[in-house]
Image (cartoon, rainbow, N blue to C red; front, top):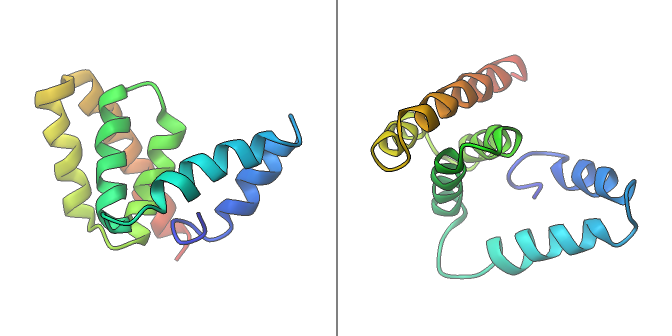
Length: 115
């Protein structure tokens, strides 16, 4: 998780542990260790796919913004990121694309304000 965004592992773990001591291990171990950590796809490709899926879902704005920042952090260009969102207009609809554009703007603003 820290490869995606510095400090993300500690932040997510702490927030989930506030609710239940085992919840953070359950969520982070499965999603990030068991799935994202698998061989076969590099982290950049996995983040591109995650952004596409979350954009298409249209119901996970916070996670979409996190994964857009993460994608930028692992080498996805802002142009590539925008193209992913635009591509989803065809497969998930224009409303999902527009939500993705909102997340895209937020992710870029976060990147520029942290520099």
